[in-house]
Image (cartoon, rainbow, N blue to C red; front, side, top):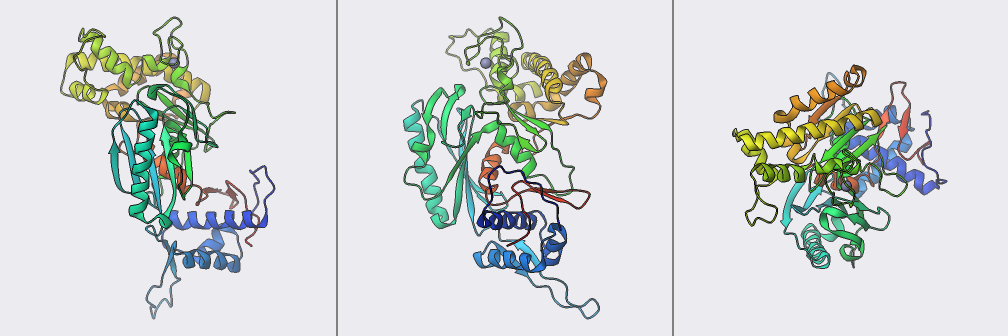
Length: 417
Ligand SMILES: [Zn+2]
């Protein structure tokens, strides 16, 4: 019998328990293709009849397929393998940003099947209206009955319960009812969160089988500023109002540069895509009001790679400031990993040495002996795939199979049925 770790505060009804058990089994099948019913009994500690009930239900629903291997005279009949039918249901992921808005359709494995981009519009109403049309078109193409839900990621603070943006400075959105615009007359649920938090989720959700699990880490996004998604003991840090882990707006220099948040001297004014473009402009002696279009952060990284001295110098300044902020992060959170995304990921091999030199100068060795700092693994898709995972995580419950054989669910379970 598995030991129960009760991590939910509400009293669970029988239907909740059934659902929680089902989500655990479904996630095991997702993570372990070709797992058998007896494997599930062994791993979960559920009774064989409980596992059968749940698996039969999932097979009837079309989410799980049974694969009957050929009998072999020597070894007898091998167990029936279970596999997720990834195409049976679909999730829609939406990544909103000033630079790049995408709508993607993904299968139950979280694989992106197709995606399209949407141009930015300064009017939030116009933009969200067009986005709603794009989402509805994708849903219609999927067949609406197949859409599990829509996950939406954006830079800034959005209430996860209401889908209302409190403040998204880089978009110029304040107190905007995003859900009211997007979900109008929709037949499927919408799930919202901050883009850096979702990118952090993606690192855990899409972890390659067999790769070491990380539980305490920070994901850094650079899209119109510096976003940080903090994961502590495997859980995203949201804070009391969902506004936690805004490290981009922590103070690096008193009386420093004016930030879009209204304060001065914020970290992201010195270490972000926006900072890189601003520093490059200054080095190029492009006046602020110049009509000449400065290259984007990604273009500056490409210039640096081709040996452009101004681009290299601008990247070096950003690396220095990035390192200063990492010192604060590491002292505050003692993470085992920092994962950098966007232009910082593209530039990582060019700035890595300078960042590490800064850390070694300022941090005791014991903080640095175990930490890894690496670019994102999902090739620029971490935020979008995190938005998809935010939908899927409502149907699959991840859990850690501990060394002592105890199973700890994110929801809870005692016994099946
Ligand atoms: Zn700020």
